[in-house]
Length: 442
Image (cartoon, rainbow, N blue to C red):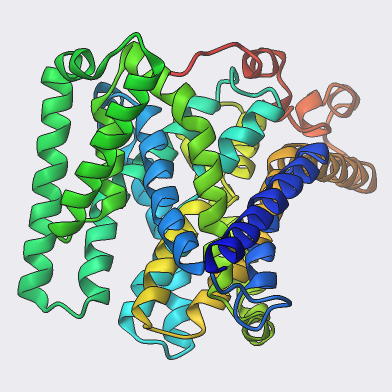
């Protein structure tokens, strides 16, 4: 009887998630907020709390996190990561400073303590790679000049997680400075070792894993990922970081084949993960933190736009591309929920989970909108400002009489630049054309 109830509950969850995904696809937005809302509806204090399937959902959620990080790792090669670290690390530092500090400040202002401040800093810092990649594809911007800048920032954030997650794990476990330092040293050592092996012996690893039979390839890659994730968890590093490093170590045809085979599993268990997070958040706890979450979302949306604008300007992208890069980085999603989920499991601060849920819901909906409209709105405001400045200069020119001693021809031959400002660099034909140049991802 228990088995029948479990099948009914879990089958209803999967069916509901499928319908929600179809609904989101029809209106071309991310299904993540709908998955979170579904978890809220069936969790503690929800409309219909689950019982028999909750333990299985918890296991599925853990697998979902592992697969999310594995698939992110498959997107990049070790050489790409090393190259990005060398060339784009200033953008990563700016990204961390502008977007992590607001979260930490809010946690301290709310009196949650330093551990919660470090957790909330991570929640506000990391953009959603999955949501951003989907939005860029939907908008047809994968070949734009600013896209490599966006991807570089996302790669640096993913790499930072290899250091950040072990620190969070140690802090949430209540480990002292010595234990925390040892955990961080192990994490850095393992990450460095895997990167070195991936750079030097990546082809050999891929050849060992490779198989022409899709079934064997799926079993080997999935088994290896779960094994490494489990070992990493045992070493107090992070199962997610272990999975990410496995993805980095695989390259070429193996990575492409594994990506194709594992994408459906990732989508399934990732959806279960978002539902699981919602299950452990009481809907009644969200309204008290809604205003702080909204304020934090507005502030960090602006700081992400500033981050993308600065990074694209540093890379020589035109004004239009800078605004597009900034708007594309606003969305938060899977990483923010992963970080908040660790804190919720540790019971650090009861209000942190609801705040993170509301924050992600706001920005995962706002992110696709800022990606689409930041550039045209900024250009329209810039054009209006230039027009107003030109009108003001013209008025001052007509109101001020020419000096009596000046020749009559001087007032007639005034340079055009004195009456009409020089065109902004965003409107030059050279940059406008270069914006749409097809540039493939490195």
